[in-house]
Length: 412
Image 1 (spheres, rainbow, N blue to C red):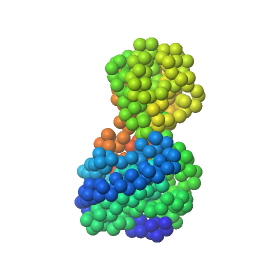
Image 2 (image 1 turned 180 degrees about the horizontal axis):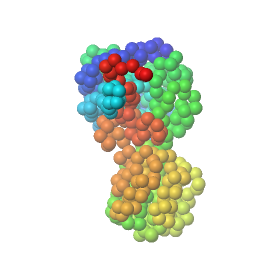
Image 3 (image 1 turned 30 degrees about the horizontal axis):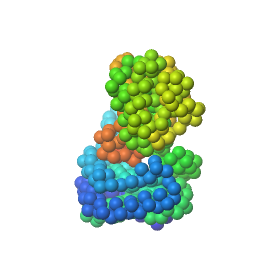
Image 4 (image 1 turned 90 degrees about the vertical axis):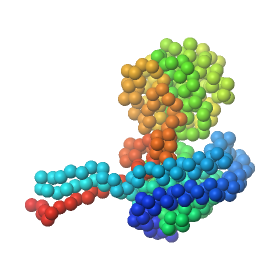
């Protein structure tokens, strides 16, 4: 691990000096290699899936793990989108002159060496590697044991891309073992080599990283997301958006976990929404008011606090906009919240008063995704308040320095 850290520092310097054209070439060549290595990647993923079933992993965990030809192609296309992004390094963020003649500029720079610890999503290997290359950061990637075979096969495509672009493979390295001691060494900072740690995974992983890390952490906490159906919601939008927000993919962090519905329209709208959800295989857990309108399991206090990542939805009838916002402030994780309404004033109140990383009007919470935001890909959705918030793409993986130009000034 310490040898990887030394190599990473060299890789960071190589990326920083390479120039945007070389970094773009490395990403594009990696995309080509992913397509060329599709059969190897899928075979490795089948081995991971079989091992996951033998271990008794949940269906939600296995769904996150699965790759197929369409997902491999989406991975390659995602890299091409990252390659097409404007290079975020070297941008002049601001510039001004002082009365003494000094010319001062704030210029974007790479963070340095980023360690990314993630669990069972194989595509994170590709997204993280590409975003770090685009932003000139060296990366040390550590995936969970469930996805290690898949990650190694994907990483081999990046080794091809580095060779084609003339870059060293130290630019991005994948920890080739599932030994948990590797995580402990990363959290220790590897002798000061790590400039930033990004955990992407379950609540327990993020909690451990935040508790033990000796380097700065950019955290992605759970997606305890809400969709609020306001009194002036369009019924068709309310049904379509709610079903999509919950059931498009139940295992992603942008999935809605709690439906809040205004008491003024609950008798009319809740049965329509509930029937559509149940038809898709969703289990509903509601408060007393929701149960009185549609047959469902009784919700407990824990249901308002749970990120299910399963086809389960908590349902609560609320007394208007203020009540909905109060519920979100009490139980939300600061990830993504949506309001369905035709009342622009109510929407603006919701967007202004709900202080989550992403707030949405009349669209599915499943749009909480860097690709959908035009970022090409993402390493995660940051629920932190410092440095980066929301989808973390290439631009969010930069910091800045001040460049001061003078003509011989001395300070009195």
